[in-house]
Length: 341
Image (cartoon, rainbow, N blue to C red; front, side, top):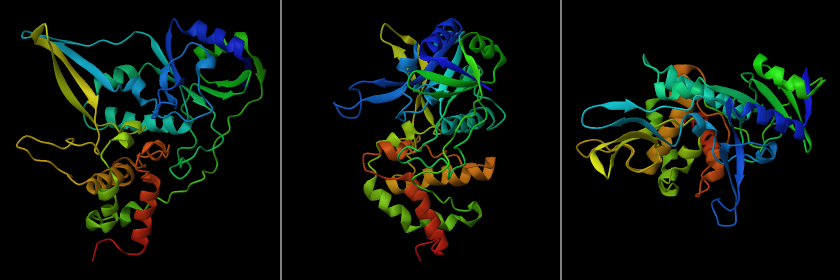
C-alpha cells in the first residue's frame, strides 16, 4: 500500500517537516561542474520537490551529510577543549539503493570496527531517516547488480518520481500520519534495477593470495593514474580521513581540530614520521584500494565493500575503470597467473 501525491501537496509535506528535519537530496548546481559549461549534482538541503535531481546520478554520494568533507571535532585553547556540537534537527536523506547499502558499510567502519564507536559519526547517523529513490534503470558505469546492492529494504519512505506527482511507500509510523493527510491510497511496490549494462565478476576471495599482490596487472595503473583522488572522494564507501589542527590568527594558542577526507590514491596519504612513505607508485595504490574493496573488507565482514555505484568510473579524468579492474583480477586468477613468473 502506498500514497499518490501531487507535487504541490508533496511540497506541503516538505514544508511541514522542515521544522523538525533537515532534508537532503541530490541537487543540481548550474555551471559548477568539471567544465565551465557543465553542471554539478551533489547533495544539499532542499525545500521543494522541484530542487531534487532524480533523473541523473549524483556525482558525489550522500555520505557527506553524515560524514562531512571537513568536520570540526573540538575547539581548544591552552587550558581546555570543548567538543563541537551538531544541530538538534533530525535528518531526512533521499538516496538510491546502492547508497543505502553503502551507508551500511560506513556504519560497519565507524560503529562496528573495534571496541569504540566513532562518536562524531554516530551522533549524526542516529538522526537519519532514509527516503529510497526508486531506481529501475541502470545509469552508465553502474554495476550494482554484480555487487548485490541494487535492492534495499532499510528505508523509511520509498518514492517514485513522475512529472507531476510522486507515489510513496511509508514505513515510518510517525511520517505515515503526515502522508495520510495529503495522499490517496494506492497499490504500490518499488521497482529496482535488474540488470546493468556492465557486469562485474568478483573473484573468490579464497583464490587471492599474497603472491597476487606482485602481479603485473597493477603496472598499468602506475602509468595511467595521476593520484588526483577523485575516485576516493566520490566513493560512497571510502572512509579514510586525516586530522588537522587549525590555530586562529588572532590567538594562536586557541583553535580547532578538524578531520578532513583523505584517500589511498592521494599523494602523502601514507607519509609517516621519519620520512617513511608506503605505496609510492600509483599501481600499488590501485592494488590497495581494489583489495580493500573486494577482499580485506569481505574477509572480515562478509560482504564486498564496493557497492557498484560507478561514480569512480564516471569521474576519473584518466578513464580508469574500477569495474574493469575487478574483472581483470578475476580473469588473471582464472588463467592461473597469480604472480609475474
